[in-house]
Image (cartoon, rainbow, N blue to C red):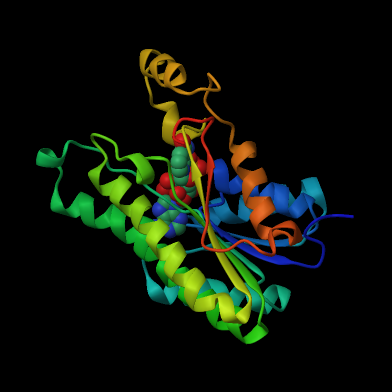
Length: 248
Ligand code: NAP
């Protein structure tokens, strides 16, 4: 039995990287999936690719998660295509790294706006349907650096720590209607976001990780699948770390 049979999922930032792996896995587990990313073209290409691989129903949507009207429209289009929204994954994220004293105000604002405000806006739009349906799952993709801090990432780590607070507050607000809200906090995962790291930095990072290697996008997707499916029905307001033991 597939674990998400009959469910519908909306995943942001899903045209590539971790979001794409989650969309692929959820589709393989029987869900209909809306792939929402900043480029409509990339979203549609990813949706077609996943539909061809899995046979699942998919749609590709263009949106900027930092804009409320885009978030409302993405939820409406998903509900129109599939009839409901059972699962929302707030995965879209950006980095604009610099040491704090060199960080421009605009670079602080844009990272908070996409990573944190975007998750709030998407959750607000999707929760309207979920609360009415008295069921739903919201999964926020945070980061290990939201738990530990990271030099050069004041904006990013603040946004990811903020997501943990958002997760816990929404979990408390939505629990009476059986809408569960959890976060996944990945460590260093091999995607485009980390491929810019120099070999030396990669080796140093791997030495700090108890399991001795960076993680794969599919390993984060499996954690999200657990939080999206029936096996996590008594879990809300939690942060599931997928970091090879980097932070305990
Ligand atoms: P990625 O490959 O860069 O994918 C992120 C996707 O989000 C991209 O397709 C990007 O589009 C899209 N996006 C950016 N701004 C957006 C916006 N305003 N509205 C809608 N979509 C937007 O990154 P990833 O490594 O898979 O990361 C996915 C999530 O995991 C992020 O939240 C990230 O912070 C988190 N995470 C990653 C790691 C890691 O090691 N990779 C570790 C911890 C947490 P464009 O590329 O076209 O701009």
